Amino acid sequence: MPTFNLSALLSGQYGEWLVSGFLMSIKLSVLAFAFSLPLGIVVALTRLAPIAFIRGIGQAYVEAIRNVPLLAHMLFWYFGAPELLPLVIKTWLYNKNYEAASALIALVLYTSAYMAEDIRSGIRSIPKEQLEASRALGFGFLQAMRLVVLPQSLRVTVPPLVNQTLNLWKNSSIAMVIGVAELMYQAQQVESATFRGFESFGVATAAYLTVSIAITLFSAWYQQRYPVRSM
Image 1 (cartoon, rainbow, N blue to C red):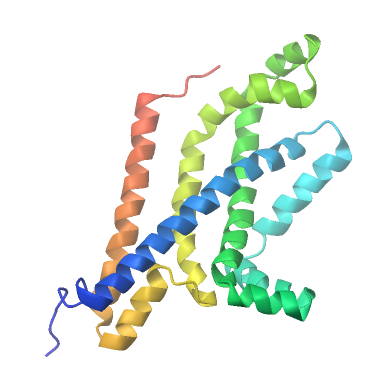
Image 2 (cartoon, helix red, strand yellow):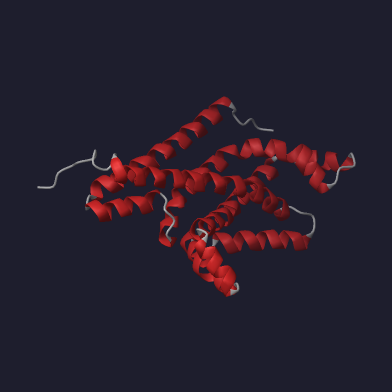
């Protein structure tokens, strides 16, 4: 009969693998969020720009990124994009942990496209009279957005952005397909070494669930602490 032995995986070498994988997942998610949010703001502003050509660029970015699976993004940036580079540079990249870098690029592009739409919706929820009043005072489009509209819209957009952060945390597990030593990759390594799949993936599942619940609780606390009032 199979036996349940969790202690064997939480100590020693296997425990170190799981902890290092968890920390890699956290690092990947935090860095991806730090780059995705400002990029999402820029893309959202291009989607609302007064110039049709710039709006077209923003729309093309969002549609091109969101209509391709994240797995395809991961594989493209790891296997496809380096093929366009000289052999010397490609070899250097693969020798410098390019797996994590390509996963980060894919996560940033993918997440920022979704964040851009949330931010754009938040901006459009602000009465247009505020933008018009700012322009009447002599502000340019970007200046009016930065000083008047964006500070209000980002507060409205926090709950959906928290949801995107939750999706980002879960999507970081896809990085295992290109060899990034994140939590799921290390759980698979532990399972291969110990043949204890239930314990290995159980620990990984508990870790993902714990962080996800923490993000969800933060979202609930924020919405209760700073309720969005109609304008």
